[in-house]
Amino acid sequence: MRRVLVVGNCGAGKSTFARALGAHAGLPVVHLDKLWWRPGWQEVGADAFDAALGNELARDAWIIEGNFTRTLATRLERADTAIWLDLSRHLCIARILRRVLASRGRDRLDMPDGCPDRLDLAFLRWTWAYPTRSRAKTAELLDAFERAGRRVVRLRSPREVRAWQDRFGSPQARETTDAPMA
Image 1: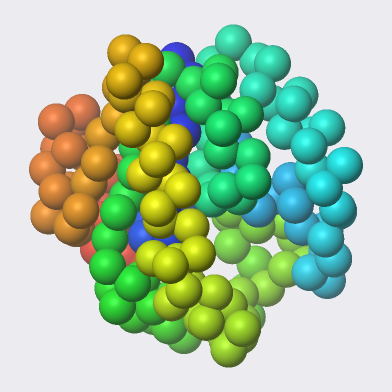
Image 2: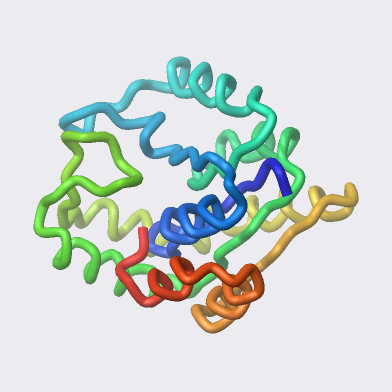
């Protein structure tokens, strides 16, 4: 594994998982939200995002975490492994609420400075709609990726996530699995 994607719904734990895997594998972690947002929750726009993503994809090794379904096919072209945290939307919403309460408006590691965590009804709706908005397209692209002979790891529960992390023996992974996940 040299070029790994971590995908899934908001609140599934992509950022936490990617950081733990990156620490274990010695790979740099790229958070797509850091490429998309600027301080004050200002979007950089598709052109700037695509250019920044292209720079990251050109590197020899990385873990890239985030959804951004529009660019998933492009990211899969360069990846050798995709890890799909395919958790229930109920769990994802609960984790988001827990994360927002725990962070109390502080910046997160997977976000640029100046983008404090906040409770946002539109974001919760976006998360709730993932199964109808993005899940089928993600499944389709990952199925094609796997048919092309590349590795897809689909984890459907926190227990499966912990078991997979335990396989790579990361103490950080075990410690952060039950923490608020991004």
